[in-house]
Image (cartoon, rainbow, N blue to C red; front, side, top):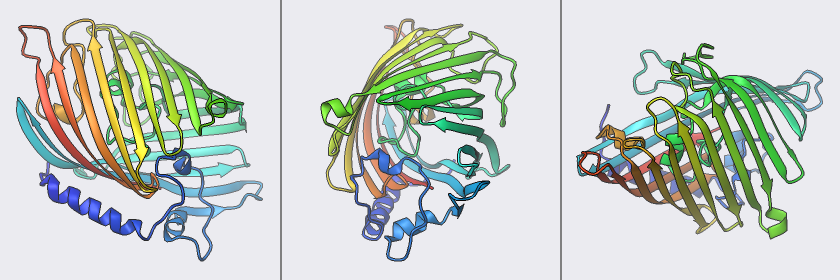
Length: 393
């Protein structure tokens, strides 16, 4: 990996984004995820903010009156991280291209949606192509039912159901890292929709051995069911969603695409009061093979200091029934391969939104503690500072 001092990278990213923020303005609070929900951007006319005009460029064609092609636009994301980690077993600092993807979305016959994206190896481009992340068709009957088929994102747990473009923390929590399926994209069929304040999502997916494209259909399946209710109107806030997720995963030992849990449950709550809010979850999984049962909690408060500057915090706790059942977070694995029985993390960070979630810089500090079975060598303590630049369109 290429190394670079994190301090200059962080300072440069912050300076550039604060400068750009004086040009690309937005009217909503940065924490309003509805402002960056990925809806097609109507081509901006003269006099619109520069940010609107720039982010309208990937929309190459749009005609709601057409009886065939209604819209075609390019989509993609470029995510960059710089981190410094200091632990009791070693230290590391580096920068990485966290994600680099390019693809396209199209809408036909008003209700038929096509979406495809590929993941690229930016730092080691031999080959440049890494994998196909999404390739699917979706027919929207109405708000109550959309049927999707192909390679799809599988959404459960708090962070697992949140796009990497819209995370309020730099990386997903280690609770999601342990129980959710970080491969994220699987071949299958799904139906989702909203009925009043209710929402649901259900799907059936292959969990066969991995390939860069659609995977092999040779190692079982899993089923996802999710249902939620938004109490926002009743409470007088923008959002107060309570959601339950359940996954049944065929315990096939040949499966290398999912985490080895036969059953996973998550109870998630998300509150958005406009200026402030928080999210919380309680998750658990029943392991198979050598994987122990695991459970944990995750709480994430946030507060909009200004229209563009946001503070976000997180506390995560993960525990396993048997020794060594909890795996470490992303950058901790650069200095240790240890697994333990009890994991906790405290995170505090700032997010600066230049153009909503489409262009933002994030910086955060975390403290991680891992406890193992007495008498083993599984204990671990670390401080980490990470700064990221997130671009999506």
